[in-house]
Length: 483
Length: 108
Image (cartoon, rainbow over all chains, first blue to last red; front, side):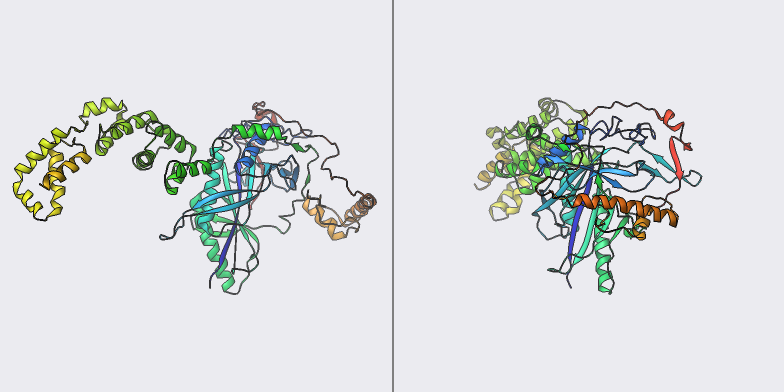
C-alpha cells in the first residue's frame, strides 16, 4: 500500500540587522544576559515600537529574489500568548496583510536512494512576514526557578511559509537548503544554524494518492538539515503505522530528539492556539513604494538560479557542476574570478575548484572565505596548464606547495623543476633511448601486446623526471612504436 | 484584501455566554469569581450591542482600515542607539541571578 507524503515548511530567518526590529538595542549574538535588553525589549510601561528600515529592506530583497508579490501596504498584528520570555504578553507579527505575498523557489532535488536521478522542482511560497523574536528561558539550576534572558527579544525575523508542495524528506531538505543559500546570498541572514539564525518548522502529513490532505503534525525548531531528514523519516513512518494499525493522527506540535531519533508530541493546553490576533494599534500600516522596491532591486546580486542557468547555457557546465558552484556566493565569486584568467576553460576551473580545492578545504576544515590560495594564484596556475608549461600532475604539486607555503606560481614551477618538456626533439630522443634499451618489449608490443604501452609511458616519464608533456609523449610514442 | 475578522469567532449580533467570558478570562490569565463573570458578561454584551449598531451601517465600497489614523508609519534607520542599562532595569526586579531575571518555573 503506497502513501503520499505531504510536507510544508515554515522557516524563521533572523535578519542581519544591527539593531532590533522595533528599538535601537543591539542584536549581536553571545552578549552577557540582558545587556541588550532595553526598555522596549523589556516591555516597560509607556514604550512604543518604531519599525527598523533595515528589516523592511531585507524583506523586500527576499520578495524580489523569489519573484513574490510585495505588499504596497502591510499591517502588523499582535499575537497574544503568555510566556515569561515574552514580556509584553504578545508578539508583534503580521497576520492578514504580510509584507511578502505569493512567490516561488525552484530547487534541485538529489534523491537519497542511489539510482534515482536528480530533478528540478518548484516550491510555491505562500507568504513571508516580519515579526519579532522572543527571549530565552533557561531551565538551569536556579533554585527551582526559570532564568530569563531578553537579549534576543525583539530580534527581527522573516517567517517564510511554503505551500505543502514537497513530497519527500529529500525535497524538504533541498528546499530548506535552497532557502538557506538564498538568504545568505542576498545578504539578509547570516544563516548560522547553531546560533539559531535559521530555524525550520516542518508540517508533515500522509495520505493515499488522490485523497484529501491528511491531518498534519508540526515538527518544531529543527536547526540542522540532517535532523530534518531524520525527523521527517521517523514521523512519516509513525503516521503510516498509526493509520495502518487503525489509529488516527491528531493534529499536534512535536519535537525531534536527536539523541533517540524519535519525535514526540509536546504537552499543550487546549487553548494554546487561540492567539486572538488583532492589528497592533501602536503601529501604523507599513507602506512600500514602487520606487523603494526598484532601489532594492538594484542592490540585488545575480541570483543563484540565474547563475546556474548561465553556467549551463553559456559555459557548457553540467547542471550538477553548476549547482555545486552556486552553493554559496563565496564559491561562485571564487569560480568567476578564477575563470577570468582562463575564460575558455570553464570545465577545467570547475574541476579544480570542486575537486582539489574543495577536498583540501574539507581536509583542513576551512570554508571558502578562509581559502589560503587566492583566485589570482589558482588562475595563474591554470594558465600554466593551458599554455603547456606544466602537466596536470605538476600542477597538483604547485597547488600543494601554494596551499602549504604560499608563493608565486612561476617561482614554484622554477624552484621545483616542474616545467614540462614540450620540445618534440627532446621527447623523441628520450623515446628512442627507451625503445633501444627495451628492444624485447618493443617486439612484444608490435606482435600485439598493446598493454605494454603503459610501460613505455612510465619509462619515458621516469627518464624525463616527470617533465615530458604527457599528450605529446603519447603521440610520439604511438608513432614510433607503430614503426 | 482579506476582510478583518472578529478574533474570538463571536458573531457580533450574538450575546456572550458565561462560557465565552470564562474562556476569555482564562486566555487573559484572569481569575474571576462567578459574580464577576456575570458582571463582565453584562458589560461586554453592552459593548457588543454598540458594535451591532455600527455593523448595521452600510459600508459598501468603503475600504477597511487597520488603524484609526489614515497614515503610514515612519521608519528608523538601522542603528544601535541603546546602551547596556541592565543594572538599572534589574534594580526593580524581584529576583535576579547571573544577569538573568528569575521567574516561577515554566515547563513545556
